[in-house]
Length: 99
Image (cartoon, one colour):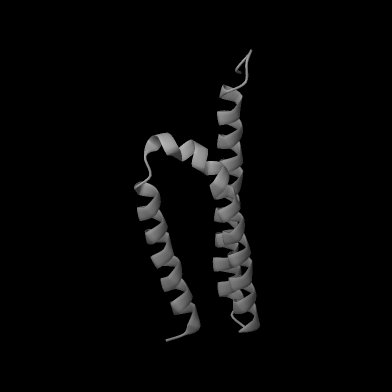
């Protein structure tokens, strides 16, 4: 099997595992855990860049741009979303105007 098939299978497997793990977390814990998850999303971003580099070195330019770009975009959405949710959560604990 080509190497990109293994990478695609890993991506699918870890996506399903991640979804199943997050699904088990109670709703009350989702917001506080977002700040900690930002660090993990940063690691995901580094992993996406490493996989992209691996594919480029193996002359699979189109796949590297497709999968690497998708992974970077999704990780960045997760990081920015995590910071937004954390900021919103912290505003609830401030005294005064909560706009």
